[in-house]
Length: 314
Image (cartoon, rainbow, N blue to C red):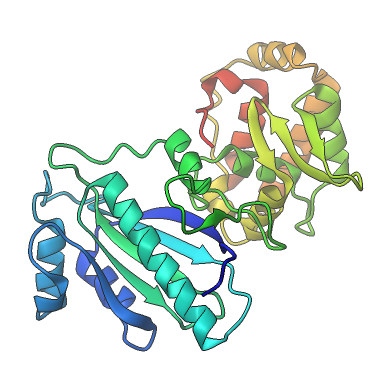
């Protein structure tokens, strides 16, 4: 048995397709060791169909007829340094124990499947999004604590310790502030625009940089929110596929031109800089469809000139 505690990363999602999710997670070509049973009603081993398993999982839900976020999905991945059978068995044991720890904390029925179809051992968890009275209160601060892995003694947090991209707990959320920044910074080639990086830094929108010993940037503050540079690069790499989700049309009637200039001046952004920013945005919008050509800004620009109207999401 290995004495080294492996590193792990946990990410949360949501689904209302319970049976479909179970069918995917329980694929025998992917699963190692069968289903992990955290049900409160019935036993997973005695369920004869996916539908029956879903009924046992959702028993006691306060709103079984709801259309959105009936259940939560969790992916718990661990750093897999070897494909040795003994080492993989140890990882499976630790994932199983972490499943039990999470079940004790949330106190809701859940099911788990350990997948072996990739080089990284990972656990898929499906849990009821209800404590019997209301949906689970999974706030961003709580999710960040989960990323620290203080809730289990069988895994250590792997966030920021690997060579890959560090993702948010909700990397596909359409309202992440890092996405707003990505919309503004990306250039035609899909890279970070040095011109606008310098402009934002000079205006004070980017500040409080944290750096490694070699001088490379780890993270920075953007309008009061801490953002990792690796997360920003990930969002920019995804931007070409999700541009229509990241650009929001700003109603011209909501703010006068004088209000925009005044708010920009408070942030140290001169009218010349704003004019140049709007010119670049109009150039990009010209490549979109006719209805999108009427857009005059993006959510990133709105966040800079009017941060009070932007939600403080991670």
